[in-house]
Amino acid sequence: MKQDLHVVIYVKLILTAVFWGGTFIAGRVIASQIGPFSGSFLRFALASGFLVLLCIKMEGGLPRLKVHQIVTAFFLGITGVFAYNAFFLSGLQTVSASRASIIIANNPVFLAICSALFFREHLDLKQIIGICLSLFGAIFVITRGELSLIFQGAIGIGELYIFGCVASWVAYSLIGKLMMHDISPMVAVTYSSIFGGLCLMPPAYFEGITNQINSYQALTWVCIAYLAFFGTTLGFTWFYQGIKAIGPARSGVFINLVPVSAIVLAFLILGEKLDHSLIIGTICVSVGIFIANRKKT
Image (tube, rainbow, N blue to C red; front, side, top):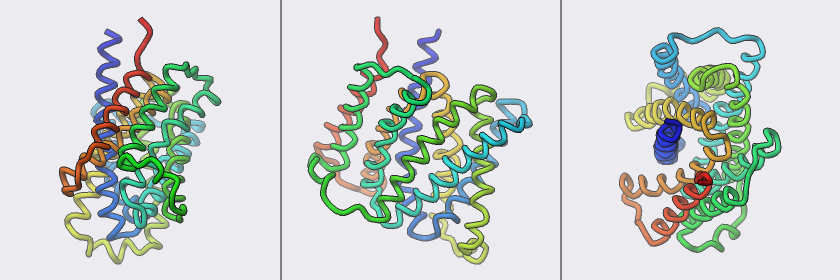
């Protein structure tokens, strides 16, 4: 029974990676047309509505938080919603989706290290090898097999914004593990979305959202809706369920599938070329995930 539950969790984490791969494409569209705070606010305004409805259906309502839970939920909103998405859309204004995805592929590495430091979560040699192999696969995909490219070129402000995504996500994941001692993943995600959306409202206003919102194109709204439902409502909830079931380090490994899925979706939607690096990288990522999550017999 427990093994079947873990299979369901793994499937959800894989689908989450696919959804998040699509966010790079949607994010590029949004970033080219509206400001980062405006796009982020609209995403989480919609997502909060979806999450509240889902919480009512699955949890029987949105429970009232205690004082210490409010503080934790606020920091979840600041890290995983406000900071991450402001960095994300700001970075995508100047950084390609591929380059951004390889930077964010460092998430599981730092997440695993911080989990070991703060939660004393043990990482054995098998898990370390799996994490490194899956990360290598992600790098191989993004660099199209030319690994030396990762060391070439100056790091601009856009890349620094995307590095901010890594720091924000690690903090969000670790704080979320603390919060889920008291409440369910669904409630945690819902409150973090609400608090984060409220924090995004003032900078979105000063960015001119009230004057520009009527001129947004239909494609922009489609991308915002995608980010809100698939990238946030389902993605955040399923990732949190993974953290609770198998831990931050193992769940974080699946983030390495995000750049792979981003390239596949770019091929299907934008017609970008597929090459040998995608095949080899996908194999490395898949094998790495299998090794990191394989239990001893």
